[in-house]
Image (cartoon, rainbow, N blue to C red; front, side, top):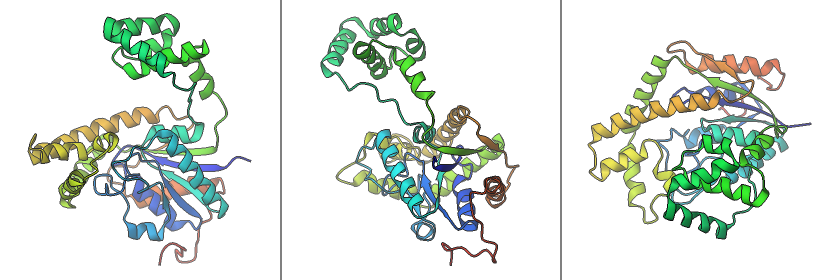
Length: 326
């Protein structure tokens, strides 16, 4: 019998964390696994809106603070580590609750990832030389002849993915688009239910603005300065995190503090829009639409009711008693 996962996702600022904590406080068998590609980094707390260490002592969380910000961390490593966390939770007869807004993490955790053949570095170098001599258009045309579906999907300047698609065809004789489709059609690794928090547009925009202002009040500039001054620096992935990239620009005197705030707000809203597009690709997801300013407790109770219809979470009714809460 497949393991069952319950997943709470939604755009940045939608209240996923508070909703998940409400559920964990009312249930007696839940541990939370983060599906956030930036909360994995130690020391990046304010800008990623991590739950406090105090809360984590009361309600077990996994996949938070697992690598240093100068280290690289791949999608494959996330799947390996998150699945290990699911197994550890299951071994204690508890239920894993996946919470986060990184759609690729969630989709890959459920379905796995298509890895394809190993890299052929000699062939990649050959393609790189072709691109240098004849330009990206020529390489893209090569792909269009053998895999028109991938060529239509990939921009000519997406050099890395164009080369990978050509490499897969060279090694397997099959288009990567067809192989990925076959992979995506296989049975999911887990049984799962997905709840997408979909707040009204104006409400979400206000929540994002408030969140950014609160990040700076909580000391984001100091946090980023400490990361910047660390001898080991920041990995490329960590450096691009929302809030951190813009604050680094401010600390480097490239923009003012007010400009950094406005850029973070604008970029976060754009990111939230992209997240919602991602979530539409999830099959059979239940979209939860809280009204303007609806609190997270009410939304959490709504989701918990849906979960309990499946008889999966045991809820304590004795004056709200909970083994994680004093």
